[in-house]
Length: 136
Image (cartoon, rainbow, N blue to C red; front, side, top):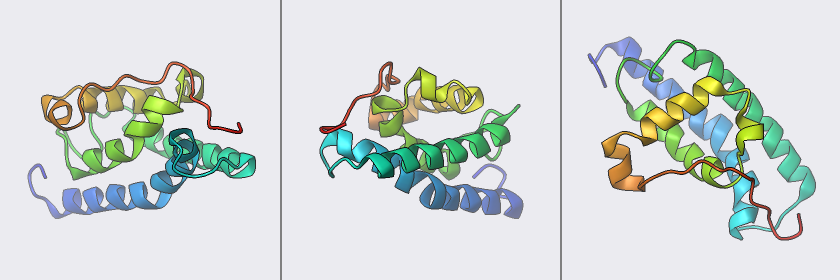
């Protein structure tokens, strides 16, 4: 985790908590119906989009002028948040949805473009048109 400072370690923990508390649930509620993992519910989908948008806004503000979440290299924080976003960004978060989150998109592309990410998740192509769930 970089230079091993306690502040960096605390920040990594904070962003991992952010992923589990602010990103994972809305991301999954939005893309799971597309993948057939759960039934589609319009109200839940709309709330998930709004909640994910709010989380991405926080992330976008934090990433202003930064390469990575905690310091100048990939940390567990980046890995955790990219992991929470990879399927939504591939399946449902199209350019229209992501247009206000330029810093997030640049950071995401930087992370998934790293050889270490590619070795695990392969080539990531961002969603051009949001996939729809059955019943949507």
